[in-house]
Length: 167
Image (cartoon, rainbow, N blue to C red):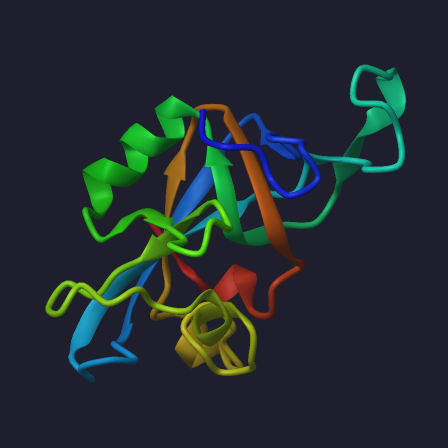
């Protein structure tokens, strides 16, 4: 697994299955169209309560709604393999300032890191659709395998999740 997050906790999300969400966006550096991916979770996944000792039974809380992860800093190896099969452009990005590593989309043309905030942080960006039509441009590939991840970004109940295309 990869480095733990800022709080020293590596894994804070787990699920019996997950989705790899894919769409296309414009590179913030060169402006070319580039493929983008993200991890999405079905309802029923679990999140670690940061205020409870991780070994306590009540530390893992069920999350009834779907979610999209971003600012991912830790992924179990099987999840990494699934991502590599779908996108060579989603990989670890090491902070030269010593801030650790984070999984990020990179432009397929110029290699520039695509800012997570620009993909997840505002309405009508790659993974925050504002209509059923734009949600339909996001494809969700179901992965019937467990996911263990560490992420500091978590968008619960994403808008138009049910309108996203399924494979």
